[in-house]
View (cartoon, rainbow, N blue to C red):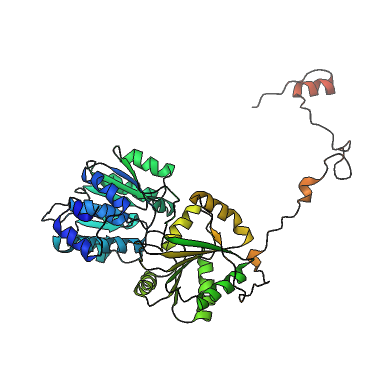
Length: 440
């Protein structure tokens, strides 16, 4: 099937051709007729399957011109980077059709975004918090929204947007079409669908945990953190095919540490990205990597979801994530648009349980790679790598039988208080009861 076989308007076909797209992916082919029918959709698709165009193409195809340019299509995504990416695709598809697309997100001033919305916004792409903030000011009316799209729902819930999503949905008209796309399906996602959706049809492109077939995966077994650093630098210096590398770590502190170590060894062409960097720094790092100015981008799992950079040659998991689904999202940054890609993972003995879960999710064993002979394995163990030694709590393990620390009370301390009435006390003292005189 090609896009010519779909019932879409001619200028959308022209823009798809300009983007180099001629054939729809599996999720695009399956979801298009369902969206065009007007039914609510629950789409399950892993990263890199093209679900952005999958929901944008039918939604824009059903857009109707309005002179007021009020919001007809509302798209909620978890991160600022994903807002800009979806917005760019929407603008490329809409072209000269007259559809006005606006992106809103936090971390920057709200007033310029409000002005863009007031100038006309048929399609709004935004993070839930910023969409809610602008809507509550009264500068973005949501009463004409015909189509709501929730993209990367599982990631939005992990980011803590559950309350904002609910409040935004409460502001929308009841008569609308709802589209939800996620890489995994949890009970909380099912709850949102049951509360706000109307009999959604489930569309699944691939089972959860299915890795892309054109990604070659391998894993190195290394003893500790410093050995990982030596192996990483050795691979980057020796392997000329590692032209555009996304290097994933689990924490912000590790991203900072690894950036300094790699930059000192490699020199220029290294940058890093995490949530504590400013908005301009984050956009600058991502754009430099996309444009080819940066060879190695060190990032937390902030960019493991949704970000589309077509020609990433290698993905390196410096440490294994404790959630196996996150590994699938990481490796999905390479091997996109039918290109070949390579995934390299590094694992210490402490991370072996994570590997078991990852391979269990994928139903596939990752090949083990031999460490090159010229790579030195370090004996130095960082403090945070050392196992935690738990001491016995002697106080809770003492024998509670009577002894020096546990003895019977003395006769003095064994006395108990007995209450004696005034009448009994007077009879004991005077031989007869003496009544209390009434107060004057």
